[in-house]
Image (cartoon, rainbow, N blue to C red; front, top):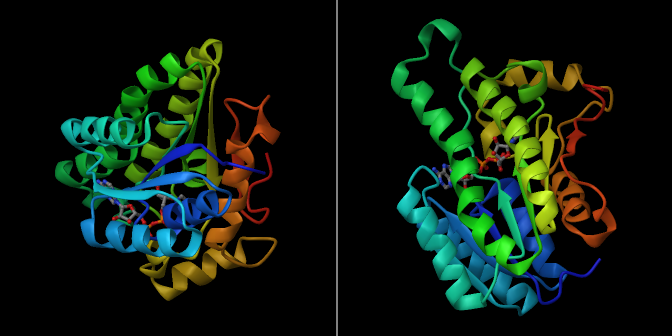
Length: 249
Ligand SMILES: NC(=O)c1ccc[n+]([C@@H]2O[C@H](COP(=O)([O-])OP(=O)(O)OC[C@H]3O[C@@H](n4cnc5c(N)ncnc54)[C@H](O)[C@@H]3O)[C@@H](O)[C@H]2O)c1
């Protein structure tokens, strides 16, 4: 599985799942652009990847809630690397707030990052990818987007259901231009996001999982690389479950 000479942009890749996907893409020869709202983790991740794999890496601060920052990310990547083969819409935030306590501000915050961010990042690369006649977009959805909030809030689940629908809409619209669009719907993954869950919630989630554990970031990154690779060249509009059997659909 070679990604040599390809250019990947991964949002929210300063840590967690996005960082692991960036590392795996780089390990297969891809140039990567590490973008995150957290400038420091983005820089540090870029430094680590560059020294481990000796490929071209850049980091840039991007808040996916802000369209001007998204456009800056796209322009910067095209200027520095000449093209964008891969966009991974990974940036996301999670909240466990119960229905009665979700304020309008919190609702907007979650939807703006998890759903609006995915739409406008994708929209911004569409023109580039159409011009190239090829490209791949991978969105990070969630098991919660299929079954509703489990430990997580209704707003988080709704944002991820939206991501699933956006994935299919973009897949249909972009197929004629050689651009494939897929999503991964992970169950609980062991990252900072779920490490913040109360211990009882983590135990309950493990209890619901036939394989009896959280995914690790490698589990998600391996599937991501498959969907982004030519091995998946006839796959578009797919929402791939990675949940240890918690949902079998
Ligand atoms: N961890 C899980 O159990 C799990 C399960 C299903 C889906 N997901 C999804 O996977 C993705 C990655 O999650 P993770 O577990 O690695 O979480 P994480 O919290 O470890 O990492 C999220 C990253 O996104 C960045 N980010 C947050 N807001 C941003 C913004 N406005 N603009 C740009 N970057 C921003 C953070 O700085 C961080 O680096 C998210 O979309 C999440 O919803 C995670």
